[in-house]
Image (tube, rainbow, N blue to C red; front, side, top):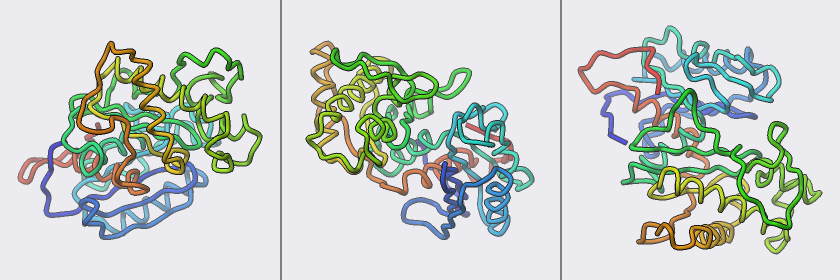
Length: 304
C-alpha cells in the first residue's frame, strides 16, 4: 500500500459490535488521541463518535471507518446484520457528512488487513489475507493492493468447506449452519463443547481437530482462489492458542498435496503483528488511502 504524506494526522473509527475505538493518528508510532465509545443503539453510538470527530476537526486530513458488517458499501450503510437495530444504519453519512475531508468505509477485517500490510505481518506484499477468528470469522482479502470487490465485499467467513468425515454437527451460523463461522468461530466452539467461552477448553480437547481442519480448508480456498503471499490469522480465539497456527499450516500443506507450493522463507500462516491495534489502525490505513497527495484536490465523498 502506497504511503500518503500529509501534514495532518488521520481520523479513524473502528466500529465494533461492543465498542467503537476513535483514533487520531498517522500510524502505530504516531497515535495522538484514542477514545472508546460503547456500541449501543445506532443513534446514540454514532452521535457520540461524531461528537468526538467534530472535537478534533479540522485537525485531520481524512476519515477512515472500519466497521462490522456486512456493509452496503455503495450506500455507506450497514446491511443484513443480526445486531438488533443496526440494519440500514447510515454509518458513512452520520460520521462523515459535512466534515470536509475524504471519507473511506470498509469492513473491519479489510481495514485490519490493510494495516497489517502497511505496518505489520503483510509488509512488502501486494496480495495478503487476514482471517480473524473471534466471536465470528471474517476475512480481509487484498489483491494487488486493494480489497477484493464485486457487487459487495467478500464474506469468506461464511464459505462452506469440506468437513471431517466424522463430523456431522449442524453448525451454529443462523444463516448457513455449517459454514466456516458456524463451525470454527469462538461462539460455535463454545456452543459445541458446552462451555462458556472457547478459552475454557484445553489445547488437547477434541473440538480443536475440527477447528484446525475447517480453518485449513478456508486457507486452501484462499490459496487456490487468490494466492496471497501470506495469510495472517488473528482474533481472540487464535491469539490465545499459539499451537493453532502451525497445525493449520501443516493441514493446509497436506490438503494442497503438492499441487501448489507455498512461498518459502518462513511460516506462511502467521499471527498478526499489530495485536489489538490492527482494527483501529485499519481505519487509519483506510483514511491514508483516501487522502490525496499534498497539493491535489480532495473529495469528501471518496470511498474504497
